[in-house]
Image (cartoon, rainbow, N blue to C red; front, side, top):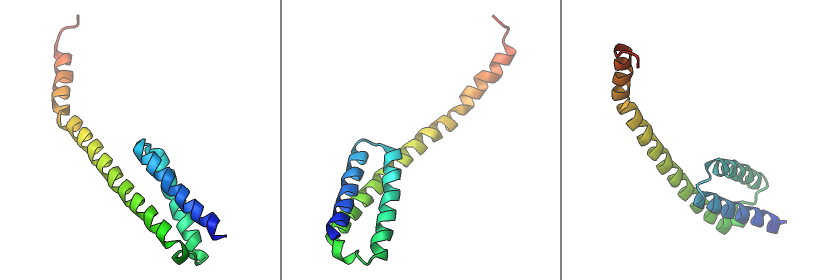
Length: 103
């Protein structure tokens, strides 16, 4: 029985690593949910201690994924901030168009 749970943990780690390498954010979110569900199931069945090495490896991958996702959020935030910051110039052109004669 423990072999099945062990393979689930290992499979989720592999899936997470692959999704992370592909920057597949929706897939990472689904895997994150699956990790939570699996860990809750393992805890409910008192299997966490038996799978400690596999869970620790998964946890390291999960922490790395969390950092990469945070970095991506920051990158996107910077892009959005630049659009907002430079929106004043765009607004000025839009206002100017209302004063210019039609062509």
